[in-house]
Amino acid sequence: MTLPLDGVRVVSLAEQYPGPYATMILADLGADVILVERPIGGDPTRRFSGHFAGLNRNKRSLSLDLKSDGGSDVLWKLLATADVMIEGFRPGVLSRLGFAADTLRERFPALVQASVSSFGQTGPLSPRGGHDISLQGMAGFVELGETPGPVSLPLADLSSAMFAAIGIVTALFARTSTGEGDVLDVAMLDALVSWKSTALASALNGLDPAPYPPDDPGYGVFSTSDGPITLSIAGEDHQWRGLCLAVGLSDVSDLSTEAREADAANLQKRLSKALLQEPWPEIERRLAEAGVGFGPVKHVTAITEDPQIVARRIIVPTPDDTRVVQQPIRFRSSAHDTAVRRGTPLLGEHTLEILSELGYESPAVSELLASGAAAVSTKEQA
Image 1 (spheres, rainbow, N blue to C red):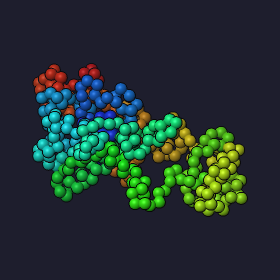
Image 2 (cartoon, rainbow, N blue to C red):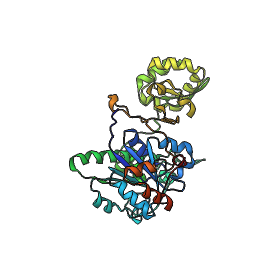
Image 3 (cartoon, helix red, strand yellow):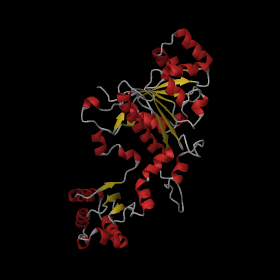
Image 4 (cartoon, one colour):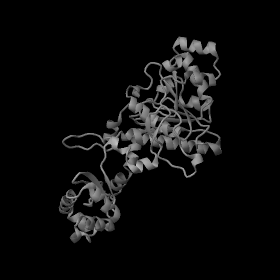
């Protein structure tokens, strides 16, 4: 199988969540992603084995001390073979290590550089670090109330990772005509603000926002006699009609969206009472036949058993028998599909392999290992 990004080498200096998620996307698409990790501990998220395994399959691990002359020299040689370099340091850190963007640009004009940071490389907050909850708060995602808190997914991490992956692929495509790479500056705060596009366009221009969740009484979480379900009717009169006929509320089945929204509390109460009388298998059959948008509410472990998830092969085993979530992009041509080819790398598992690819011979490798400039995993030492 020829994968879409076969032949593209990505050097990742990024830790935690955004960089690893972005490079996971690229690795699944065929890129040779090399994690450059510190010898002591590596990526801090290695202490959470499930988190690290969920983001780092299909990658190789090279353990280097970038503060040492030997480690720095290895990175320069590695970057000379790379198409992409992604980093997640605070602005200025990479420069202090001797790898400033302008320096890299001068030495490797075809290299695509991507930086993912909390606030970006410019602006008054650029020197600051920050984590997801701070950025969610600044972007208007934190809900206040009795138990204020962020959305239960790290949205700043995920959104910036996806924008970084899109930006990298775009820069690689542009390079095919210009021959030159580019320097990408992705801010986690910017990514979240972008996800607020419709709310901000409404507020800034005096336009009517679409409420979320919608005001339609057919949208929300309800209970059947043996478990919760979600309904997702948002302004579709034909789906409301099908829902009402399926649960015995024919007297309100012809209400328009506006009429439903005006009497939402009463209608939602009646709908809740009607659904509570029905077992899930029966209500599933009726709603499916009526063409209504709905679904069961599942816990994490039950997701993997869903027939739709199974049919789409979204959960797959790695070669080391770790079950992971596969790349969701599907290509019609199986010759260009994505693949899980490697398991989760041990820290420094591929150090010797990569040093050999870069032309290092045994005496030089031994010197790097003895000085602590490079390190290998216990698996390689065995």
